Image: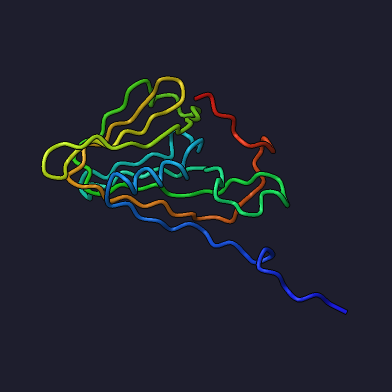
Length: 156
């Protein structure tokens, strides 16, 4: 005799979220917190005014984490309407560098403009000057077991 499927056994869907204001940015930040990425996976297309990162993010939203090992998933974090990009504490010449994203915040300017700040571990950061907030976080691979097999710790 077989059992009926339960809701808890259902397949979780990949994230595909957008952000159009500072509150939305907070949600994306919480989901991208502790993501890691090679320095080579940052792209700024000045002509298209788009900045993107290919992240290996921890799946904070994973409802089944009690049933299996902690998971990560590759995701694209992209920002549109980017006028300027500035980095601090990042050596772009060292192609083996792995960066860790701590938070994403928005500092408002005038008339919807402002700066999106990507704070990195080790006192690094990326400042995106934007005409308006338009960001997306989209999972692009299946989840995989986190190499550390543990949940990231927070030193807040």
